[in-house]
Amino acid sequence: MGDNLVFKIALTQVPSVGAVTAKLLISYCGSAQAVFQTPKKQLLKIPGIGEHTARAVQDFRGFDRAEQEILFLERQEIRALFYTDAAYPDRLKHHPDAPAMLYFKGGANMNPERAVAIVGTRQPTPQGISACEEIVKSLKTFEPQIISGLAYGIDAVAHRAALDASLPTIAILGNGLNRIYPASNKGLASDMIGQGGGLLTEFLGDTGPDRENFPMRNRIVAAMCDALIVIETGKKGGSMITAQLANDYNKDVFAVPGRIRDPKSEGCNFLIKSHKAGLIESGEDVAYFMQWDPPSIGNSGVQRSLFSDLAPNELKLLELMRQQAEPWSIDRLSFQSKLNGSEIASVLLNLEFKGLVKTLPGKRFLPV
Image (cartoon, rainbow, N blue to C red):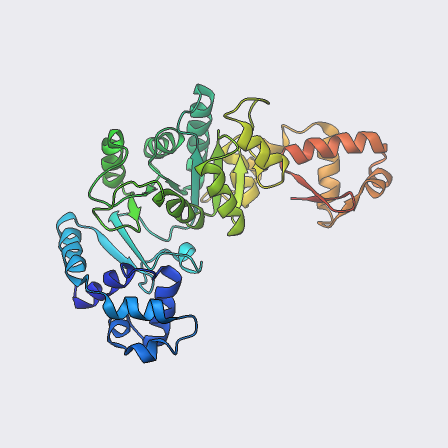
């Protein structure tokens, strides 16, 4: 793997040098090796590099640890992906907080045409399990890569459903690749690698599944997808953090609604009613909102499937609004549709719950 990899790994292990600082240092010095060879007084001239960071680079002596990691990577057939490498995930690369180094075991494409992340509770209900399985199954036509975190519950259900649907699936781990966590998912992880998926992490091989690693893992899940689906979650926890990150990254976020006052649906319902996620009931809904066409098939079947669930007045208003994709007032809709204001308000509320219309300031409405 070469001496250069030693310096790349070493740079990620320098105290106080995170992903942003590592990339800054390389941009000024030219390479990871050059960072360690640059005199301290020159490092101090780099904007944003202070005495503490410059000293940490100069005093670093952990190169033996980096060499040991390379031996581990070779034995386990793990690829090291530096952010400057062509194989590094493009969806992740442009985010400032993207890891400088990733480690990947498996054969999956890091840059698939479509990628869907699925997250949710570790203790799903039978309804949540069924919803996850059905959504993944109905996404098969559109051939996305399925991404999750290999955790108990919805994560594991999503990975297994992807395997059953012959879709490649990648797990983003909060630990190193010398172990599978939780251990009960070891067989699942092996199947994922064997069926063209894989395991991805930013942590060195012997890193344990420490609590602070999982929020870091969640940002990779959010960044590597085109669409994030939340299935059963409370109002707090890792799934909600991932949904917020996905919104911050301008990803499309969707949630499966649940019963009111159900603790496992509280998070999904909150995301929907606060306009942080679109309401979905199937993979076809996701494909429709993402404007995905099945390979060699038009999307008319998806649209017909979605529109067939609309009431006549819902369909009437939606088709009217989509003639001009701009904000509409209730008065304007009433004039053109010949419906009264109370009818329109009720219809718009239903369309908003279905993720087909969103409310703008000033009581204006925009078709999605």
